[in-house]
Amino acid sequence: DIQMTQSPASLSASLGETVTIECLASEDIYSNLAWYQQKPGKSPQLLIYYANSLNDGVPSRFSGSGSGTQYSLKINSLQSEDVSIYFCQQNYDSPPTFGGGTKLELK
Amino acid sequence: QIQLVQSGPELKKPGESVKISCKASGYTFTNYGMYWVKQAPGQGLQYMGWINTETGKPTYADDFKGRFVFFLETSASTAYLQINNLKNEDMATYFCARAGDYPGIPFAYWGQGTLVTVSS
Image 1 (cartoon, chains in turn yellow, purple):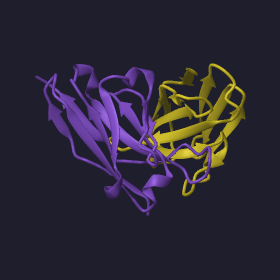
Image 2: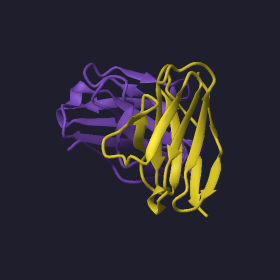
Image 3: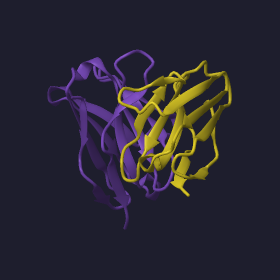
Image 4: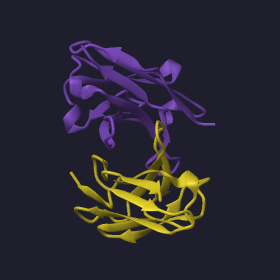
């Protein structure tokens, strides 16, 4: 199975800041990388697919980039509602696998 | 709009079975496979497998072969996850999920999750 390593595991940032979360795949996943946001007690919500395509309704302050084995999620101008856990997921090979998650908190 | 509505929380004893439902609406049920994802308390997401809603054929991830069963009630647009011989490590929230409208778009729609508590 393809291993997905996310960093950092937790992150504290101030309102208005820009934050970046990284995801490293154990092999090339050819941009088949998605990012999800999960708020406490809720189901995950798809933010980005194909590494950089924004899902419908997702604010433009979220963006994704990367290729090969290295990917990142950037959140510009952090808002209070962005406090969540973020997961990356590869869907290049079966089984799809998730990163361990990044818990984003407000400083 | 597309909705996946899951059954409510369950409290079970070790060795018992549990059946979780996921009722789909807002689209043609047989056009999209249904996926299942496990999230243990405070942990990440673990893919369990999926069921082909057109043929009823389930495919299980390696960690979920044996005690886990996916099945359908197509007439009711409902997918089910049954866990037999429950163990403490099965205590988790279980999500059903559907892929997006275009090929390659992963889990775009999720149920609200069903919490299974296993306690003697």
